[in-house]
Length: 284
Image (cartoon, rainbow, N blue to C red; front, side):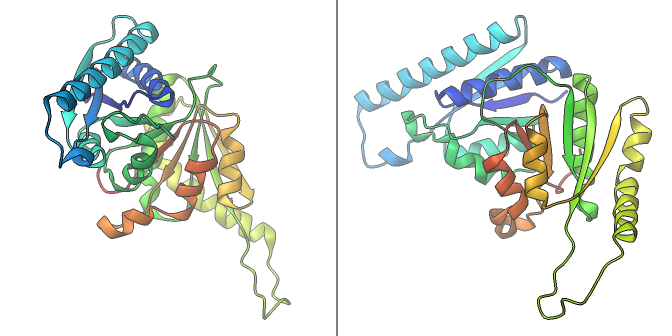
């Protein structure tokens, strides 16, 4: 059983991530791994016992608060506490690849040890092979819905799998959201579309993508939500009444993943609930 890993930097948002991660680990029956990365790169030209003591003291305080938060949230949960030296994005990406999920706070601005999770969370969402969950606020009352953003590519199978798994673990329903817009032809405005035919085609695409997941989870409630709307607008709107929104990344290789995809990136910035970004680079 893989651990659920959460990165902490002392910010309020990283503590919100600890709560979300503790809940996820408890539902999975797995351990929670709490990691603080000590980044010495800003101080490479400085060598002093005082600095070492300050960094160690800061790391101790951050880990103590994170452990307290997790134990209050989920008493009795198995935990592993790790302080690791390195560049936060590199360390956390490696841990994400070997975890059931990496959970991070969004816009974390903890200054200690230069560990600014707000900046690395976007990098990790595009780079890590393991699922990356970005949490902004402390967990609210559950509404029992996981949203999966569908698209027309075969690469969305792994995000769908993660969404169904999350819904099953947490006793939620799945909202399979497929948003689409008709193309516009500025130089040929007379072109028209049979809207019902387009809808039927989009419905067939969604049904094909969901088929094997419905079979794997036959008792899980799944609701098809097809919308003629921009995907970002539709997903952000759905996030207002969801516990989790799952999206794909579509970054191909190291260079491609830097871009991550305009939909995923914009949903991360504007969604109102935790967002899971799942790349298609490994089986889940």
